[in-house]
Amino acid sequence: QLQVLDMSLNYLQHIPPSIKQLHLKELSLDQNQLISLPEELWELTTLEELEIWGNPLKSISPNIKQLSNLRELYMAQIELTELPPEIGQCSQLNHLEMEQNYLKMIPSEIGQCSQLKYLSLAENQLQALPKEIGLLNQLEELYLNKNQLTELPSEIQQLSKLKYLNLAQNP
View 1 (cartoon, rainbow, N blue to C red):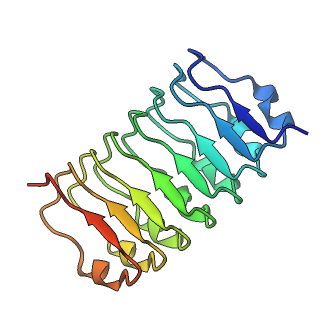
View 2 (view 1 turned 60 degrees about the vertical axis):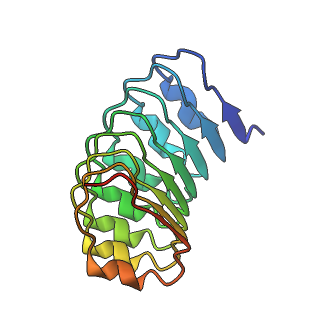
């Protein structure tokens, strides 16, 4: 049974709804021409790793919450302007990459992703972080470089496992 499907670098413009019939653990759709993802994609509840970076998606469905086994999510360079609050229901996430997007804020629900060890929000337009960032007690690496941050919430001090913090090139 197919567990890993890599369809990256294929100039794909859409994914067929029949994708929901697969029982994948890993799906790579990076560097295509996808402007949307089919709602059926969010029915892949066995998915542990999803790579959608490098597509002009602009948004992510709130139904991402259905990916309850998702551990790694790569969403860099997808022209994302907003992260759905439902990301907080992806409670198994331990690796989240969202660099080079247009995010101005991160929803407070990010604090519910308590298994996160790696979080990259570099090269966005963030002006502030929610205080709930302090709830990410497993976080080891946090990339906030190249944003518009002028201060951090005091709750960031609660990140006792944090080993690497990148704040370069903020005002």
